[in-house]
Amino acid sequence: MKTNIKRDIIKLKKEKNAVILAHYYQPQEVQKIADYVGDSYYLSKIGLDCEENNIVFCGVKFMAESAKILAPNKRVFIPNKEAVCSMVNFAAKEEVLREKEKHPNAKVVSYINSLTELKTISEACCTSSSAVDIIKNIDADKILFVPDKNLGSYVSEQITDKKIILWNGHCYVHNQIKAQDIINMKEKHGQDIKVAVHPECTKEVRDLADFIGSTGQIIEYITCDNSEKFLIVTEQGINYELKKRNPNKKFYYLDMVCKSMKKTSLQDIYYCLKNETNEIIIDDEIRELAYNALHNMHILSEKCKNASVN
Ligand code: 13P
Ligand code: SF4
Image (cartoon, rainbow, N blue to C red; front, side, top):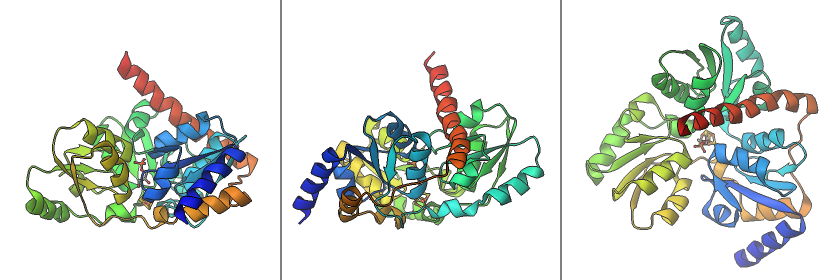
């Protein structure tokens, strides 16, 4: 059954001039069939740059919406429309506008894990890999950072000459982890285990990290590091790429599973391609406003990359 469905997906993909994108948290069989797998920043660029007219986005809804906002001439589909990131619901546009009134000089920077509506009032978006660069480069001394308080506090530790106002949102998968969980794992697996942490974790957890970064950055760090064992403090789906690139290294995990990221199945991808269902549709006016924030994300993070090359 699985062999047939894989073959059918590949056939349909060609017929429909479609590309399949997948996030590192997706189920293994989905990552295996995808044309491109990456972190949220990489996927936001690849959707824009790829040649195909149709994008099947295996991730969560805000990722597929961002792809549509950035590439309005392409059709973007999400195989399972129940796949939504719960963090986005922490910050509604109206609430953020009310908070902004209290800080007239502040610019709103929204984590890409946010509602499209919120992006329309944001100066720029950011991902976990680009947040520090973007806030460094943005032309403002005061930032209202929404919705993730943990990523926001991580950024404010790196950039001390700007005032960063935090919002009270979080990711339930990362926020639940305690410093004691890391201490227990180190006792069990050895104090020499290297600890890689996603910045959506709390400060007490980040303080015990050997490395902090996005999913893509964690994979790069581990691939370049000579240690033998690592504690991975992010969602377990990352294990597929980590093992592929580092077959001889040992990886240990905490109980971190994003239910939404696990909703997409091969069947969903097949039906989505076959019937062209679950297309992302965004009102033009809203899309154009939200585009500015996502476009600025690419400009501001590239600006920093260029600066560090020179
Ligand atoms: P990355 O930017 O690291 O891919 O993170 C996306 C995400 O949703 C983390 O929970
Ligand atoms: Fe959202 Fe957390 Fe899932 Fe990432 S892991 S998609 S932030 S709920």
